[in-house]
Length: 468
Image (cartoon, rainbow, N blue to C red; front, side):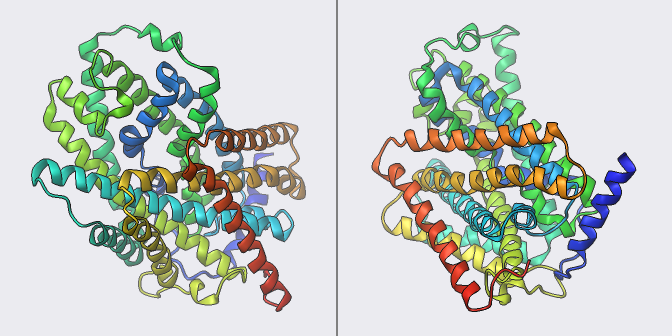
C-alpha cells in the first residue's frame, strides 16, 4: 500500500514539476525548509506582543487558549501535509485548491493566501518599527523616522529574498535559533527560581470567562499563521514530498509547545508585579530582570526586532512564489512569472511583494499609526486570508485523494472538522471586534476578495482565464 501511495504521489508531483518555473531545484534541506515556516510565524514576536494581548482577554487561561490554537493548527497541518505528500509546487495552498476544486475556489484561495502573506509581512514590518523605537529610546533617547526605517526593513528583506533563496533560508534559520534560544533561557531560569510546582490558578482557569475564550483564540491563531509557508518552496526543496510535510507538522508542534511555555511562564512571572502583563511594552525584558539576567532581556528585544525582519523576508519569499504561481495560472501578468537565471528567484514578484508591504505600512505611518497598531491591524487582516486558504484546502483534500484512488473516511472526517473549526474561528473573529478599526477589517477583506474574483472574471471573459 505504501508503494502504491508513493507512486501516485510521484506522478502527481511530476505533473507539477514538468512546468519549468525557473527556480533552483533541490537547494534547500530539511532545516532550511523548517526555517521558512518558523520565520513566517515569528514566534519570538508572539512571545512579546501577542501573548499579552491574549492575556488581556483570557487571563489565567492564556496557556489553555494556546492549547486550543495548537489543536486547530494541527488539524490544518494534517490537511496541508497530506496535500504536500502529493504535490510540490511554488503555489502552495493555491495550487492544492486550484488543481482540485472548480476554478473560482482556486482564485479565492490564491487571493486570500496572497493577502495573508503580504499583510503578515507588513504587520511584522510595523513590529520591527516598534522595536526599533523601543531600543533607540532605551539606548539613544531618540526614535528613528518611521518611513526610512520601514523602507530599510522591506528593502533588506527584498534584496536577500532576490539574492539567493538558500542564503535567505540559512539567515532566517540562525536568526530564529538565537532569538528563540534567548527566550527559552530566560523562561527556564525564571521557572527555576519559582521552583518545580504548578501554578494552580492557571491550571484551574481561575477567573477565566468562557465568553472571552473565542476572541482570545482568534488572537492566538495569529501566532501560528504562516506555519505552512514551507509549502511555497516546493520546487526548491530536496525530496519535497517528505521534507515539506514533516516541516509543516514539526513547525505546528514545536510552536505550540513554545507558545504554551511562554504563556504559562509569562503569566506566572508577572504575578505580584505592579504592571499587568497586558500593559507591558516588553514583557520578556522585565522577566529577564526579575530572573537576574537583565542583559538577556536586551538581547531578547534585539532578537525580536531582527526576528521580525526575518519574518518580513519569509513572507516576501512566500508571497513572491504565490504571485509567480498566480501569474502562471493567468490570474496576473506573466512578468511576475519570470525568474532570474543566475539567482533562480522571481525578481519582479519579489520586488512587487516587498513594495506592497512598504506601501501598506508607509500609508499607516503617514497617518500617525504606531508600529504596534500596524502589527495588530494588519495581522488581524492577514488571519482572514489564512483561514480562507486553510478552509479551502481542508475541503479540497478528500476530493483530491478520491481522484487518486486513495479515499479514506478518516481523512474526510478530519477535513470536515478542520473546515468547521476555521469557520468557527472566523465567527469568533467577527464577534470580537472591540473597536471601529477591527470592525471594519472583515469588510475590507470581503471587498478585496470581491475585487479579486471580479478581476478573474474580467480576464476570463477576455480569454486570459486560468490556465490550470
